[in-house]
Each structure stands twice: as C-alpha cells, then as structure tokens.
Image (cartoon, rainbow, N blue to C red; front, side, top):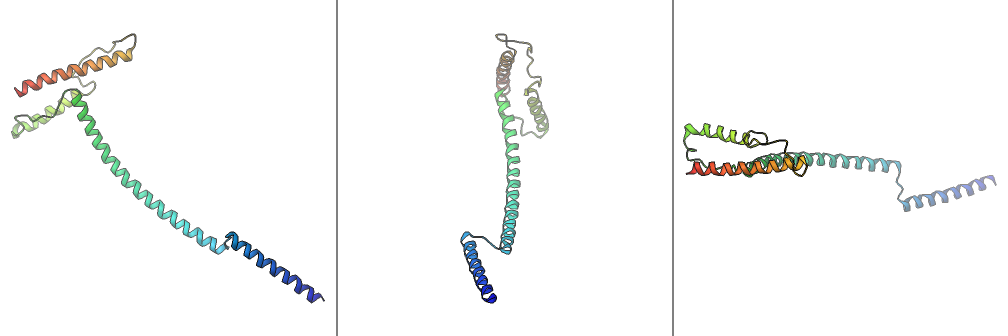
Length: 160
C-alpha cells in the first residue's frame, strides 16, 4: 500500500511539473542557460552599437571642426564688410615686389578694424537717456558708420 501511495504522489508531482512547464512555456520563461546566451548576445549588440556610435560621433566632431573654421572666416569677412573693408583687386597685386607689402597692409587693416583696433577713437563715457549701455551702442554704431564712410572714400581714391 505504501508503494501505491508513493506512486500516486509521484504521478501527482509529474502532473504538477508538466503543468508548471506548460505555464513557463506559455509565459516565455527561459532556462538559466538560455538567459545567459541571451545576455551575451545583447552585450555583444550593445558593444557593437556603442562602437558604431563612437565612430559616428568622431566623424561628426571632425565635420563640426571644419564647419567652425568656415564660420570664423565668414564672421571675419562680415565684420570687415560691415566696416566698409572689402577684398578688392589692387592694380599692383600681380607685381611680385608689392605682394608681401600688400598682404602686410591688408593684415594691418584687418587688425585695426577690429574692436579696439585703433581705426576709430571714440568717447567711452557717453550716455543716452541716462543709460551707459545705450550710449556704448550709439558710439559703436556711429564709429562703424564713420569707418565705413572713411573706407569708401579711401577706396575711391585708390581706384581713381
């Protein structure tokens, strides 16, 4: 009798185990080995995507550096044009003896045109409607206007 009782209990455990396995399968529960394999595969994918992302970031950084260099050149040109300094072809540009002097002169003009470069001397303590900021803005605007007018006259004289 004891043997029959053990068989009955064993059959009951087998039925319960089969039911639990069916439930695990239905829920998508994986074994420890399957979980480890899945983790390894995901780790490899993460490493590959990270490497790809870093390579793309490096390429974008290189591209950004190039664009920033172009912006600096464009900003400098815009600032010079704002002051009336344009890149023009001088009649002596082809003369080898004058090329270095013309280049030095253009560099000097660029340096003087920048803020506090010495091309324009203006009052610093000016106020407008009691505002020092508005005064500085007005002085800056008039300084640009005067420098632009001067450069236009100088350009006309050189060309004439």
